[in-house]
Every structure is written in structure tokens, then in C-alpha cells.
Image (cartoon, rainbow, N blue to C red; front, side):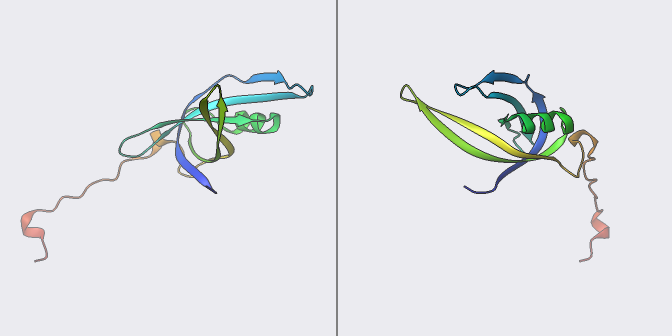
Length: 117
């Protein structure tokens, strides 16, 4: 499972959650949703953990942007139930810009007498 990546549009960014670990270190975390641009779009929720990563994410990303997300998958068991977390470790704005600015390709129609055969 190396190099997992997804491309889509950021649709929602949650509030930053801050706390202190048992060891006394402070931490930051936020979540965001990316909607894929396939025939059947899917919403995928990711988390960003760590003060530097959260600050950089907020500085360079906003809702409505087309992004490439590299992530890790992690699952934990608690009370005989498993919880899965998609942890984004790299989020880049896609060179294509926003999905809303991308024009649909124009279809060309040929008349029956234009065919080469």
C-alpha cells in the first residue's frame, strides 16, 4: 500500500482541533473532504495531523480547489470495533486549477456525407 493518491475537489474543511497529549505535548488536527471527479463521484474524508502540516494546509488550500492528496491508511481497534483513518501527508493544488473552471470537451459531430468511407 505505498503511494496511495487521489485527485479531486476539496468540498469542505473542518475546524482545527487542538489538544495536549499525555506526555504534555500540544497537537493540532483538521479534516477535509475531497470529492472525486469520476463518473460516480465519491466524497472521501482525510485528516491532517501535526502543527506544521495543519498550518501549511490552511495556508495553501481552500474549498473548491482541485487537489492531489497522498495519504496513508491506518486502522485501530477499540471495544471490538475497527476504525479507519485516511491520513493525508501531502496535499498539492492540481495544476489543472479548480474543477469549476475546467471546460467540458466540445464534441464534434460529423454528417453522414462527411465520413471517409
